Length: 305
Image 1 (cartoon, rainbow, N blue to C red):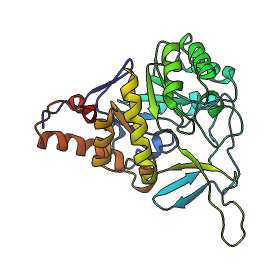
Image 2 (image 1 turned 90 degrees about the vertical axis):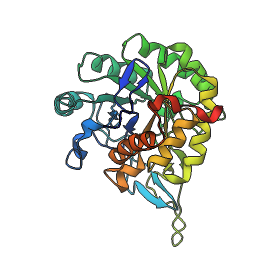
Image 3 (image 1 turned 90 degrees about the horizontal axis):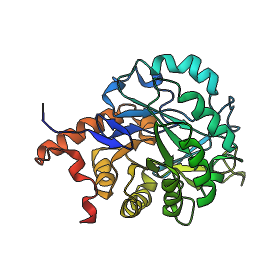
């Protein structure tokens, strides 16, 4: 044993280590169980859940770009009741934090999901998705201005005492303004960044490649931009921060922690290397042990010094 303390706090939650997996890249958890013991992660963030099932956007839904991935999945999911009936039994067996990503087309959609899942023992917290860039209604509509964000978070805060994490969009002038409003309404923590709006065009046809025309860009291409957003928010907010955006290895994860992230979330890397998140857990422990760091929390925000 290295003796390194990897535990971190995210809002009202204590995680065994700071490594989470991003919504939409890890299914409902079971999909990755054959690759490694997912109980070794700090937690998982499920696919977005909406009150009714969603078929998602028309294909093609993904396209590779230099150092990145464009996706326009469109929040495809099984819907709230199927999630409770079919997915929750497995999630309740896990010995790690389960955070449910929540999305909707209206305030009531979000309220319905949180109200229903607040009753479930296997749910430890909620990530409120107000930043999906590739749906036509809802989602990002609540994350582009402070007032709608605060109103939504306030209503959800009244529904649950579980950890509320607000997922911020980089596709706004100042995510910190949205965060400040959400914090005032009861948010416990923030995750950032979600994907950046982007597109790809077929050189032969001159038409957009994605069936939705636009999508969200993730992967190493966005890491410097995401890192800056985490650094900036951590200077302005005392709330916990989950950093994400192009994290593929331990070095990437430590950059986000030094920038001010209390935890990190692995996204696109899961699609490239299914064991990436576990490798980062092991890598963070080894990194700290090699440098005589007894507690990873002591590294958070070092870039501000």
